[in-house]
Length: 300
Ligand code: URA
Image 1 (tube, protein in one colour):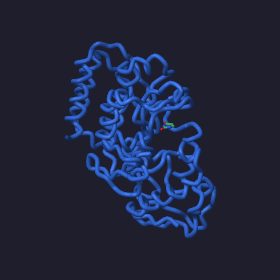
Image 2: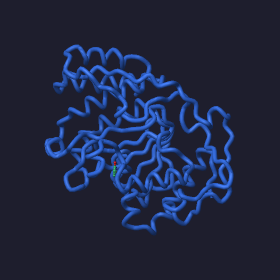
Image 3: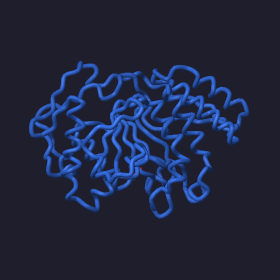
Image 4: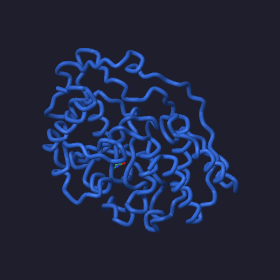
C-alpha cells in the first residue's frame, strides 16, 4: 500500500470513529540542512578500534582515533528535531480535518510534507482514547521523534514513567543506554526516527495488552508509511513480535533481516533487558555490527 492510500485510510477511519477536529499546524522555518556525510559524499571511515565489542555502554565513551563518518544516514533535507518543536494551534476549528486531508493527498516524498503529516498524526494521537485505561492513566501521549526523513527507524515497546512525563520516547534509563549504543555505532540519535508500539504508558510499566497494541497499530503503521525508513530496528520482544506478527522469542529473531513495508527489519534485545542482564550486551553488539555492515559500515 502506498503512503497516500495509507494516510487516506487512516483519516477515513478517524473520521468514522468520530474524530472531527484535527489541529492546523504551523511549521518553524528551519533551513535545509546537509549532513556532514552527505556534503562530503559517500565515503565511509570508521575509526579503527574505535568501539569495544565487549561493552556497548562503554563503547560510546571511547574517542575514535580517526574521524568517523557514516554515509548518508539522513536523507539530506531535514528540519524537524522533535514533535515539541511544532506549534500546533487552533485544535478546534471544524474545517481543520478537511485541510489535513487535502494536505495528505500530496506525495509524501518531501521532508516538509512528511513533517506536516507526522505533526497532524501526532495531534490526532494526542486526543486518542481508544484504550480507556491508558487514556485515563497517562500524563500525555508519546509520539515518535526524530528525523521524518530518516533511513533508520527504531521501534520500542511503550513509554515508561520518564517518557510519560517528558512526552518523548526513550528518555529514561533505557533511553540513556540506547543513546550510548547509538553513539557506539557512530550514529546520531537525531538522525534516527524513534517510536514505540504504544503511544501511551501502560500503568506500572506492564506489558502492552494485545488489544492496546492493536488499537495503536494504525498510528505505528502511519508513521512507517510517512517516514518510509529503509531499516527498522525492533528493540525487544514486544516490538519484534507485534511488528512482524511473530510469536518466537527475540533470541530466535535477532541478527537476521525480515522485510516489512519495503524496510529491512532487524530485531535485538531491549535496552531495559540489557540493564537487567548486562551480559547480553555482547549479543546486542554483534547484532548491531551485523546491521551496520549492511549499511556499509564495518564496526570493530
Ligand atoms: N522503553 C520503550 O520501549 N520505549 C520507551 O520509549 C522507553 C522505554
